[in-house]
Picture 1 (cartoon, rainbow, N blue to C red):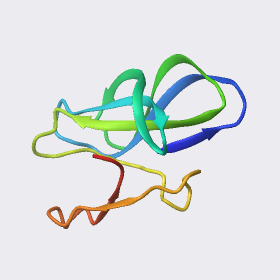
Picture 2 (cartoon, rainbow, N blue to C red):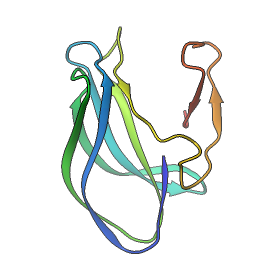
Picture 3 (tube, one colour):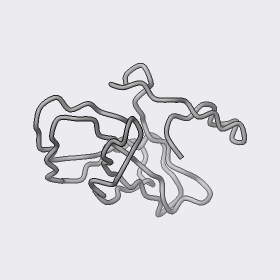
Picture 4 (cartoon, rainbow, N blue to C red):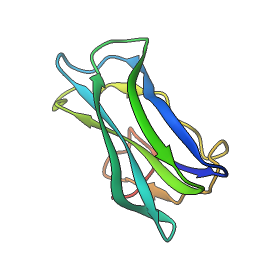
Length: 118
């Protein structure tokens, strides 16, 4: 998800809310990418992982990441979930600070339209 930062800040926590648990041992890796002409660029921060197998939980990782004004991409990637991935609450396109393209994954009809970059 792209986020426009308008003044220098230091982020002290990054997290996500797991709505439905994934398989035992599943993880959600969180991070921040620099912008590269409107798409995610180089990795700025790999914040580590939170548990993907803990339903209805809000989890945070303590960080200390300074951000200058500009656009940054906040990312979450499911790991260690070959059979059942966790369901994570996401920001809808209408809530995003910068419009994102839609990637239609017709091979995965249960997902419908997914926002992001491959």
